[in-house]
Length: 103
Image (tube, rainbow, N blue to C red; front, top):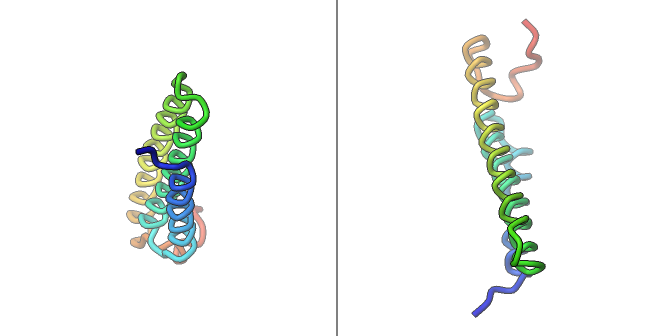
């Protein structure tokens, strides 16, 4: 039994919508970063789904998914480092309370 392409696209659209909602509604910087990870995972799911239904003989879709996964991991590491530095300097990690990053 094969899962249709529309099912993958529907799940990816739901993930993308949840990620956008999280970015726009959350005040904590960690939650904003987690929401961007959900958006990147939705894009990766779309990439793999289109790869599977278009040309499963080559591995371009899987390689692109690994690139997206690597970029997401690097983005999370850099984002958490910035959050730790802002928390040390300003004693808050709320996005709306940090007006600027200038000293």
